[in-house]
Figure 1 (cartoon, helix red, strand yellow):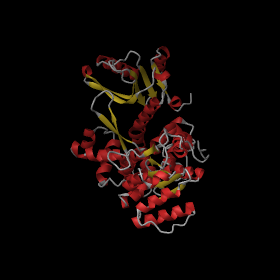
Figure 2 (tube, one colour):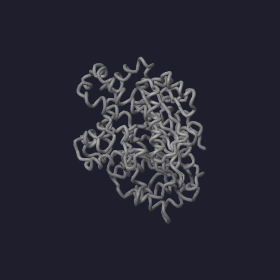
Figure 3 (cartoon, rainbow, N blue to C red):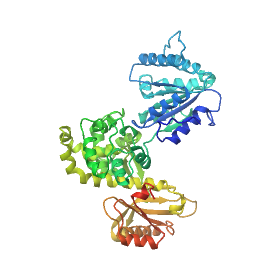
Figure 4 (tube, rainbow, N blue to C red):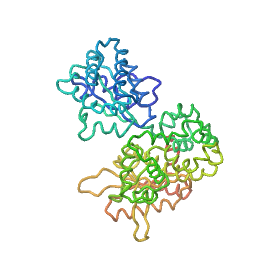
Length: 493
């Protein structure tokens, strides 16, 4: 495998995938001819940094496209190819037909990555480019005699997702499809150098696992400890003089599919305020449910919102904002924007801090607990989790419903009831006690009545503020009661 440079933090799995694609150990890349890879991911996740490191480690070529006309893009690309190969191009390419052929022929003898970053810029000014690449990779194309490992990269998720979807020209041509995600919560804490799990949750609830926010956007400013967190929020994300201040707005503005920013901000604000169902969002926005279906689909395509099914109510789903900074902006900053712009962050933060804990940190902590469950081995819940999510269990006798924050299901076995490995409740701001466990016990009883297999269900309490003695006593005597505190969440015990 290609040696990963020391400056690349984490990304071991991504680097391995890129290495396999470049060095030809994969089944697809082992064939004769050029190969195509597609790398995507939202902005600020380190795609360009990773691919630049790859080309430097292998002697490959890296070209970053810009917003330009087709003619200028062709000229810039040809200049970059000439600099890399040190071969003078006698006849400049007339169009992308010539340019793609020139590219593949330039790498007949070297099996190295050729990265075209910000590919959506090129595709926008030259819509035929994907079809041209598809043709040249096919029988009789110039790619048949090339060893180039062409990597198309971009941040416009709707565009990059469409490259390989449906009847798109490049569908079925890619030997690598790699999405660069934010760091997961434990890795993010390591990246920020935060060892206090409570502080790690708070910082992650604001900025998530986006690598660029650690150095480029905060200039390396990390809260020293819990006591410094409030001051850190004020001097970074709420400070009009830092790029973080307007970043959430830019994330939305960068998506070309979003043509009515006001509507999309209102949809995001609805979700950030706790309205996670289609009907709840529509009611908050003041539109009919069918009128927000399209905006929700666009936000999903842009990887800004995720639709997560209710594991216990078929056909029902909840929406969640994927980027924590957008949640923070919509729930905290947007309502007080005019005050923040005139440097009144300290006063604003003092009045919204409790809202931050309730509306932002609480739901975010639930999401982290679900991530914890996803990583569980077979020993924690008695089997490997096949599906993890949230769910609602109706309680007709009490005319209420029980919200399950962390539901863990085993794989479905034909002819057998679905096994519920675990039912969990997560609380950030309150000490959990026996009453929380009783609610889970009631949910287990109700699910058994609906035909689920709950004989070995583990009842889990995920506590951000600790556990009362009656609950720890129950966990001490019943192996089917699991307590997960912050230290365990972050793997410190």
